[in-house]
Length: 155
Ligand SMILES: CC(C)(COP(=O)(O)OP(=O)(O)OC[C@H]1O[C@@H](n2cnc3c(N)ncnc32)[C@H](O)[C@@H]1OP(=O)(O)O)[C@@H](O)C(=O)NCCC(=O)NCCS
Image 1 (tube, rainbow, N blue to C red):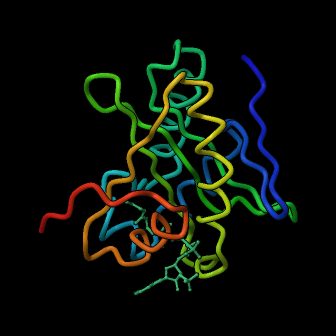
Image 2 (cartoon, rainbow, N blue to C red):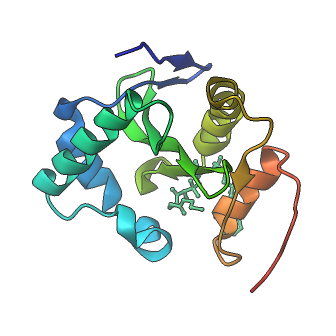
């Protein structure tokens, strides 16, 4: 398995390992995740472990994705993830989750800003999509702060 490690001022973005199952389960339970990305809520540790094992298998899968990486504070806490997910026709979408207790600290913005160029380079792509529900104001704000260009706005 190739190394993957991005360091920012406050964060380390690296690969999942199985020991993260419990925190991934706990992080996934927050109210915003349930509302905006319900398919990424893991109700049990075992469910989270299954997802992690699948995601770990994708790291060696010739960039077919999804490519999902945990976000760890330099003080050690696992606070969420950032990801690149394949769309059709060779396009990719960026995604992110920051656990509710840690939101509002610019962590998602810091992670996306660091991750996007690295994963674009790894995938050999020149752009990546940010797709958000219009009522997910925090997510829209993250994309705006990361200078994503607005291409389409539909209800
Ligand atoms: C979206 C999410 C990743 C944001 O994480 P975060 O670390 O708090 O993001 P940041 O701190 O970098 O930026 C959030 C911005 O949204 C703003 N914001 C948060 N809630 C808001 C609201 N209800 N209305 C308007 N702005 C809001 C914050 O004030 C901040 O902007 P600012 O820096 O100008 O003050 C986090 O809320 C989350 O994981 N949500 C659930 C999963 C999800 O929706 N993922 C995205 C799917 S498209």
